[in-house]
Amino acid sequence: MIEKLNKAFSKLPGVGSKTAQRFIYYLLERDRLAGLELSKALKDAMENVQNCEKCRTLTEKDICEICSNTSRDNSLLCVVETPSDTHVIEQSGVYTGKYFVLSGYLSPIDGIGASELGLDDLDDLLSNQEVNELILATNATIEGEVTAHYIHNLAKKYQIKTTRIAHGIPLGGELEYTDINTIAHALSGRKDYN
Image 1 (cartoon, rainbow, N blue to C red):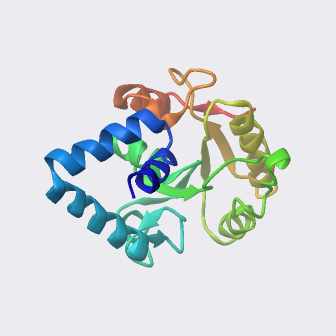
Image 2 (cartoon, rainbow, N blue to C red):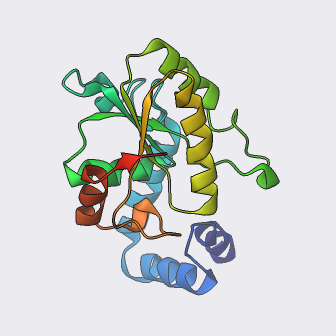
């Protein structure tokens, strides 16, 4: 049973066998109630959290709170790689538009192409919605840059202004691990993609 738990915890990013072992023994020896709460919370999340029908972020509803918020600016669309990137940008308190979550980046070598990222859905969204500016907030990695370039070309056919977040996001860095002030600065200092 403990080995099975170790394998399960070790599947989490950044959690190796030793860290998993510490989690397991802590819960079993010192806080079984917390272990039961964790188990219930995980089960509930796995059964009830889904992708938003509009932006593809994670939510318990068909349409997430951001997409259903009528005070958000529909003319601004920020494209991010993961739902956690959306959360980080929201914490900055600067951005008031809507989002589109890719849930990854283009990586042909890994079998991840445009259809796996929902880029057909993004194309439909751009053709049917009054988007004036598309903000590319993919990570500053090679894959993120390739994905941003692909999306820029997609927006270009609809003559939509494309900007790229900049200033402070280090090359090779990921939004999820960037502090709130750097995110706020990067959004307010975005520039044309060209």
